[in-house]
Amino acid sequence: MARGGFREGAGRKKEYNEPVKKILLGLPESVLKQLDSFASAKNLSRPKAVAILVEQAMAQNGQLAV
Image (cartoon, rainbow, N blue to C red):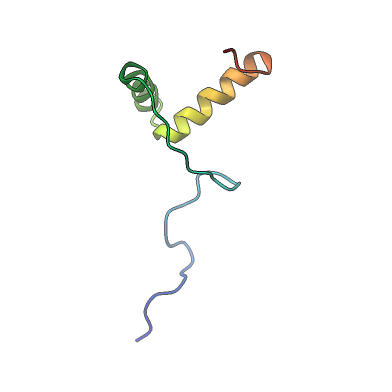
């Protein structure tokens, strides 16, 4: 009996249609709690919540305020 190999529909579905770069991100605990609250309220993963918040910030005026 053959085992392993690719099966159609198997595995985790891709969340993005482009390559994903892994990063390590340090945040103050208070900011992390806010991020988790946002993600939970929108039923998102942390990385997806970060991506959405960055997109929203960029959409406001085309650049991030620092």
